[in-house]
Length: 197
Image (cartoon, rainbow, N blue to C red; front, side, top):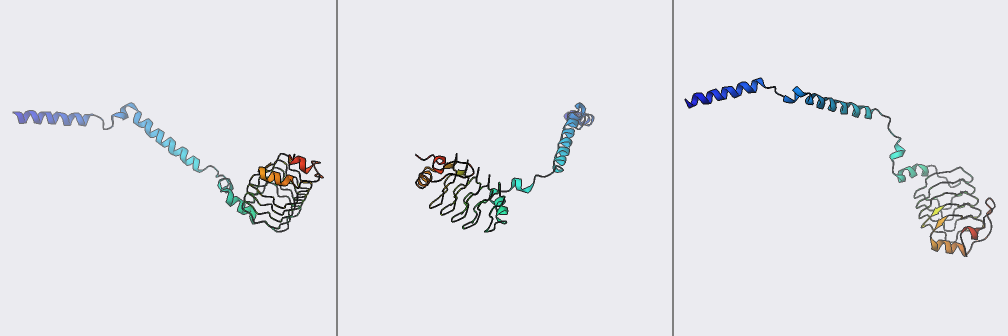
């Protein structure tokens, strides 16, 4: 008798399992909404792949962008338009950049020792840890230049305009010791532009 009761119970459970839907969520549409959401996300992802890609320079490391600028370096760049160029770790010792327009250029960790920058416009230049030792900076405009950790040992600065430039205090004092002249294009006295006392 017990076998018969167990058999009937088993048969009843099998019948209930067959009559119930395999995915009960289908009855309520939740499963269908989930599939729709997944498909929507896949379509948006595919559309994202079709968007135009940003230029490679936008995601290139500054050192690599600077290398492209370095490919065009020549020892004589007198009077050239070099606005906003990047010269990162550039070896430019002894180069002629006299009267060049270098506004907004970047010279980080560059070597400009013994270079001719006379009469050049270096307004808004960033030259972090750059060597200007022995450089000719006579008549150069260096307004608003960021010159932190840069060195100017024995640089000629007569008539250079350093108005609102940011320099290390030790470099400012050393430059004040030899500051002379007035910048021909801006009318600023070199000593005054350096904040010499």
